[in-house]
Amino acid sequence: MYENLLTNESNGIYTITINRPTKLNALNSQVITELGEAILEIYNNPAIKSAIITGIGEKAFAAGADISEFTELDGEGGKQLALRGQQLVFSKIENCPKPIVAAVNGFALGGGCELAMACHFRIASNNAKFGQPEVNLGLIPGYGGTQRLTHLVGKGRAIELLITGNMIDADEAYRIGLVNKVTELSDLIPTAEKILGAVNKKAPLAVSKCLTLANIAVSKPLVGLEQEIQEFGNLFDTKDAKEGAAAFLEKRPANFIGE
Image (tube, rainbow, N blue to C red; front, side, top):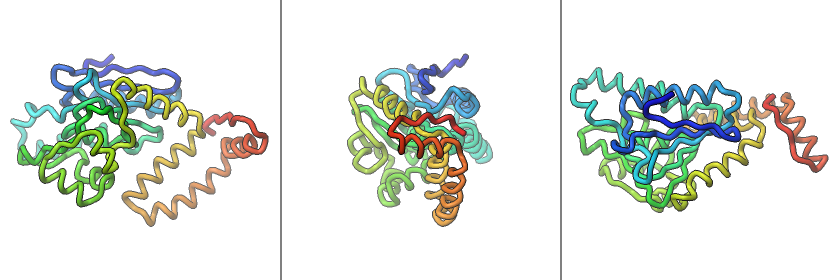
């Protein structure tokens, strides 16, 4: 179906693997197009409850954008490149109503780091490396890196990484809050699947609202508090909320249906 992606759905978890091993899974325009299509599948396929994004092999999650595509761009072309990526992929991931986890299996640099940061959280193998080296090209991140990195690790650490272009390893990424867990490479996907397997048993509407409100908390905290009250109340009208309370009182597992 895709030239640069491998996809698989199992037990409600949709795994997207970037498959450009000779280019360290770099994000060229075709990969962005295909990722956009795969993300829409997550949105639209009711069998998919959550997703994992990873890279093929043991070297790279995604080692940045394909710089060969930069050489002919002028200012307007650069803006359109960034806008297209944001609209098709990065913002779509961040705003997805189903959780999408980055399983970072190696280099996550430039656009690759931005792809991981757009996901709802990140798990890294112990050989993973993170960085935003765009300053070395006389550029800045264009797929949301300046914003999401600051939200995740704080202003001071983000500025240091952005203006030095330095690369950090998985343990440092964990220490500063860029990733949630660090595993052996062989345990990376199983760990992501275990977490999402547990999430998939939760009430889908409640999970979706948690994702939405967490995004609002970062961008509009006061609006988020107001909307949290509204959405908290709205969920009491759902079948899943009634089922959750009944199951708790009856000391049995809940059977959530997403309604």
